[in-house]
Image 1 (tube, rainbow, N blue to C red):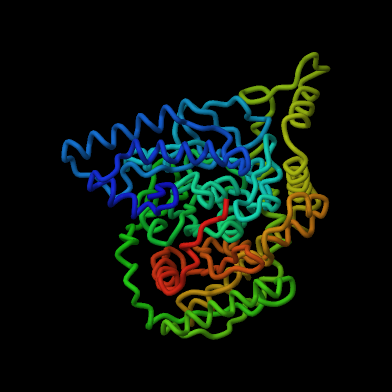
Image 2 (cartoon, rainbow, N blue to C red):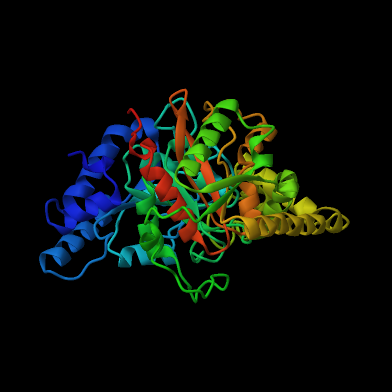
Length: 486
């Protein structure tokens, strides 16, 4: 029995029956990490002592017959922008290389309370800005399906860890596709919840009106299990929604004949690789075979999503990252300084990588006097039009379908100097963040030996509908059972 390749729900049964201990599972994961990490490079920090301590606590509860939840003893990886008390949270940036938070993110607290075992902190694009995990200040993560290719980003370390069996479940964050795109490229399930469904407290912010924390898992049931843990109102996050949280696993019943799906025509046209389009259209046929009614739908303003995003997100980024100035915490340039402005400018020039500096400058420009109305205000108006397109579509359909990534995983370095090609990697995912709705990526096929993801988009706070449809599709195929050939 190869423990690292099992799902959380499979391991949960073994742990609950005491056929295997939580410590044995954790040790098996660290053994897998030792075997593969030099090639995959998914972690920035390993938390072995903490993990074994949590595993032993889980085993004691089970041995004493205490009631335990379905994720007790399950190993979890955390994207390195989630605050962890006593452990570094670097955001893959020189700016925060040695920062140790004095508190935990709310999702970290919830997962600890659920009895999960923290393996470590995963690599990412610096401050979550990128689509390939090549922008990390410390290392480049490799795709487990082909080590010469990117795993996607910015949650590439989390996706690669799950795909390689170096984690059972991982948490990431999604501002413009940063959970779903790496999930697609690494053959995982990735869910961006509705804005406000999961607390953002303790998430180091990139763009506060777009960011959302969510899971990366091996299959849909695991995704539902972890959503049961992390979703819900948090008094520490004023943007979290005070709405009841359903039992997401209760909706995985295979009953989908009543569902209607809209296939987005604009997201199957220009820019979508033929092999990706073929896999997604074949998956749509399979949805129809399951009894789901599928029809084409148009989102006419979706073509403006990319420019809207690259005005709003950098604008919010320039504000959020202003706190990193070398005075209060984080990196500080070496003295002497001519004055405080010299301290600020040198610190930020040395502490931030190229992509982060670029987005800060873009955002500052868009918000500056004389340009606010021409760019930022106009982007907010078009954001409303994009959301209205989706609202109209959801009057007819229960969920919408598109590719997740327009292309297969590309080679490391292939797009490093092509800003437009890199940003076009997010054309299918960005409209979802702009509208604040939930979306899920799941494996729907393979091309050239590489995974292809299908994106399901849902109404606000109806993640259960996406999980129900995704689970029915998943159970009718074998894509989720395939493992990267490492």
